[in-house]
Image: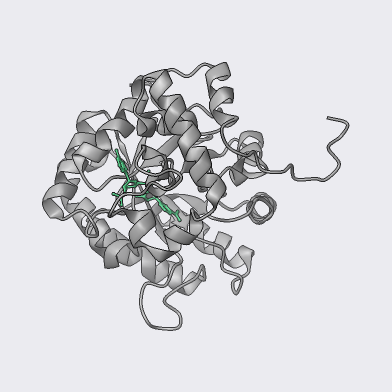
Length: 322
Ligand SMILES: NC(=O)c1ccc[n+]([C@@H]2O[C@H](COP(=O)([O-])OP(=O)(O)OC[C@H]3O[C@@H](n4cnc5c(N)ncnc54)[C@H](OP(=O)(O)O)[C@@H]3O)[C@@H](O)[C@H]2O)c1
């Protein structure tokens, strides 16, 4: 296995991280266990979860599956989205993070979490409060490194500046959305990660299923996330995305790879990415994502694939001088 180092941490992880969002949702316990075991067989040592995945079941089941191999694994979990009905059961406040980390540790059956993510930006909590609360959790050994998902580059850069100025633990890992039709991360987040030597585990490499060959213009499966879940239907609703999926499916067929394998490989070959987070509801679905490990994309082939979808506009309007 071609392990990769997470940013400056020295931690070695497989170039694929397995995401457990399906555990307790569209994967029952038997399928979830099989997904975990298949990931381990493939050499994956890196697992992502969150407090809110299926009401805590994903953490609980992952905790059960890792018994016996905990010390060989690198775990992430997250806090920030509402985890209960209480007004304070959300966000990135010291209060919520402390409660959440205790609950996640309990569900996971472990005494530490390698990477602890703030799941999304909390406009009610000062960034300094969040950074200090995470530093305390690190000092106590409950989390090994702070991490952040779904923040914009200026928010992360501000947090990095605070951490440096106050000598507090900094975010070592970021988790943006990134796939062939959702390329916003290329503009600011991935350059920031490269510049600051942050690890990057990006989510939704298949666009929630869009890039698996089963979607295209006028083509969709009877069931599937982009059909069944309104937020995903909206997220991937643009007609251009389906045109890009058609072009990508044709390219994959010519290339001789399963579209899902090629879509994951395309993410994996971005130089700033540490590992895409792969997801599936069954081992059958998981196989092509694992097969991405066998694809060696040349920079030219990666650029050809990139040209199949629209690149996001640059971060500044003055671009004519190159
Ligand atoms: N930080 C965040 O905010 C955030 C957000 C989302 C995800 N994540 C993390 O990232 C992980 C992966 O994200 P994701 O699930 O969105 O990734 P994804 O790879 O874009 O989508 C996975 C979905 O695609 C479909 N699929 C996968 N393989 C397939 C195949 N071979 N053939 C046909 N369909 C296939 C399945 O959905 P259907 O069967 O329903 O079509 C599967 O659940 C999650 O488990 C989670 O850990 C984090």
